[in-house]
Amino acid sequence: MALVMGVDSSTQSCKVVITDAATQTVVRQGRASHPDGTSVDPEAWWRALQEAIADAGGIDDVEAWAIGGQQHGMVALDAEGRVVRDALLWNDTRSAQAASDLTAEFGAEELARRTGLVPVASFTITKLRWLRDHEPENAARVAAVALPHDWLTWRLRGFGPDIESPRGPVLDELVTDRSDASGTGYWDPATGGYDRELLIAALGHDVVLPRVLGPDEWVTDAAGRRVGGGAGDNAGAALGLGAGPGDVVVSIGTSGTVFAVSEERTIDPTGTVAGFADCTGRFLPLVATLNAARVLDAIGRVLGVDHAELSRLALGAEPGAAGLTLVPYFEGERTPNLPDATASLTGMTLASTTRENLARAAVEGMLSGLAAGLEALRLLGVPLERALLVGGGAQSEAVREIAPLVLGLPVEVPEPGEYVALGAARQAASVLSY
Ligand SMILES: Nc1ncnc2c1ncn2[C@@H]1O[C@H](COP(=O)(O)OP(=O)(O)O)[C@@H](O)[C@H]1O
Ligand SMILES: O=C(CO)[C@@H](O)[C@H](O)COP(=O)(O)O
Image 1 (cartoon, helix red, strand yellow):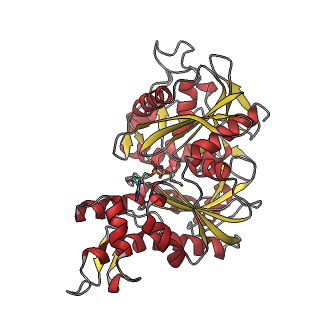
Image 2: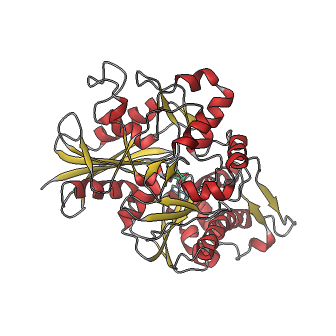
């Protein structure tokens, strides 16, 4: 039996699955936590990856691997391969002004046409502009820019700055895949090439960027094993789920995302739908919100209850929560683009202000952002027949029951599983020709 490893290095944790390459059956798995915060030292992800691999029983018997991960984070490296500063994550909104500046300089339509994206603070290009404007000395030291999954792939292949990495800082060995490259804001989904003019406009100078591996391309690690190009986490989930035409994946993790696999690339000059690529050679129109599973975590904390009790409370209230409405912009918001917004609770009367209604308003408010995303996909002509609900928030019974009402689509909840890591494992199996 040939074994392969797939990884999901997500916002909150690192998950590893080791599967039978022929059947995709999970043989072993492991996980480790990531630190909180929107600005993180990538070394913490590297330690978590090693911990999760150890938790999964090691990879000595694995023949190929691939890593999926949270998208967009800026991992800036100097000429020696050292990280220049903590990575700015997809949910760090400090680059909101940089996003507006870049949009003003090039125009939303042109950027959507050239990259599939209209900049918001989540995208890597805005983080590079922020670095140029706010930390010019750090910006000047940047020799390469990678994304979280690119950097971890590079480290696990045996590259890196220190004696721990005997293969040395070979920046040209950085690789990525189409899906994550398409979230940078300086990659063109039409040509599959980087848009260096935009990169230079953002950072101020040219740098090494990871080579974009095609769906069946692979590199090797220090042990000679095949390594796939990996994936952004959403594209990884689409692959792991085997999502097809008519399916829309609704993922409730730290981010809320709705996305579909499409044969055609999408261009949305309003910026609501990101015109990402997937990791199989197709496209992945996607809408993302900054406020998803943590909305439930926050309201659970306020009510002093765990997830199970929060769910029970929410299901004890009527639809509409007697008019209590939570607009859950706790971390600002990305869709709609309101980086400085805060959350609000309205419709409070003596009658409506109950624990049950507050729990229900949290679930309904969080899902409403995703329903707006579905509508935006529908307006772009993406066929939507059923929703596949995944991510940590999908473990909530209340979310599962209320989702069809708010989303207005039949909702299927696949067997609980680490679909991003499973997608990465599927890619690893395919580079072994399974
Ligand atoms: N039963 C549950 N009900 C609601 N939320 C849950 C439940 N179980 C886990 N979560 C939440 O799901 C989130 C983690 O989901 P995950 O998809 O792994 O996130 P990410 O991919 O962003 O790291 C956490 O915020 C966690 O509290
Ligand atoms: O920014 C996006 C997609 O554009 C997010 O989906 C990130 O990729 C983080 O994902 P999770 O860790 O929340 O799953």
